[in-house]
Image (cartoon, rainbow, N blue to C red):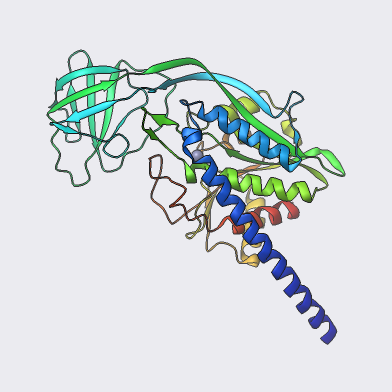
Length: 386
Ligand SMILES: [Zn+2]
C-alpha cells in the first residue's frame, strides 16, 4: 500500500512534469498557428488577396510536415466552387460631411451592388435610412458592426454604420464602392489522416473551418482569430499528437473552406465523401476555440445523450472546464450536414473572454487562447473512451 502510494506519487510527478512540458509546447504551437493565420498575408482567409487559397496551401504544408497522409488520392485538397461577391478596390463613405473609417465606423454589407455618388437620406424607421429612388441605398445604424460574406449580389447597396450612443441622424452620404462578383470561386477542403493500426477503415474525425470573411476594400481585413484560427490550431495540435500516437482506428482531420458563406465545404464533403460516412464512429467539430473561461457548449448534446454524458464525466473527472452546456441540433457550423447524414457528431465552442465576432476586432493579439490545453485533453480523453 505504502509502496503503491509512493510509486503512484513518483509516477504522478513524472506525468505532471511531462504534461506541463507538453502544455507549454502545445500552447506555443497554438499561438503560432493563430498568429500566422491572422497575419495580413492570409487577408482574413477569404475572397481577396487569394487569402483562402494561401491558407489552404499553408495547412497542407503543416499536415505534410506532421507526417499525415492525404485523405484524397490526388493530394491534400478537395476542390469545389461557388459564387461570391467581393469588394477588392478602395472604398469610401462620407456621412453628414464626416469621412468614415472602413471596419471601424462602417461596413459595406456583402450582398451590395457597387455605387458612386452623393445621396440624401430619409428615415425608413428608427434604425434605417434610405435613398429610396433608383439606386436603392440603405444605411443602417447598429450598436455593433457585424459582417458575413454573400454568394449573391442584390440590386441595392446596404451600409452598416456604427452608432454606439444612438445620436446619429444620417442625412447625406457620399459613397464610392465597387463590387466584383465571382461566379466560380475555387475553394478547397484540406484533409489528411493518421492511419489506424488495427482498424484503418474505422474513423474518428476532427474538423475545423479555416476560412473566414476575408477583406472589405483595400485596407481592411477580418483576422478571424477566434473564428476560426483557434479551432484550426486545436485541430493541428491534435494532428501533431495523433501523428506521434497512432490509434487503433484512423484519425481524420478536415479543414473546411467556405463555412462562413454557408457551410459550403462541409456540405460538399458530405455529398462527395473521401471516406465512407457510415464508417465514421464520431466527428468533433471545433469552431470558436479561443476562449473557455465560461466553459464550453456542445451542439448535438441532446441528439447523442450517451456520448454527451461521457464527455461530461471526463470533464468533471479531469477538472477541465467550469461548465459544459448542452445544446440541441443547430445548423451553425460544419458538423451540421454530417449529422443530417446520420454521422454522430458534436460541435464544441468555447465561451467567455471576448466580445469580438465577425468584425475587425477578432484579432490574435486579444484572443485569450487560454483553454486550448483543456480542450485538447477533453478531446483526446473522449476519443480514447469511445
Ligand atoms: Zn466559424
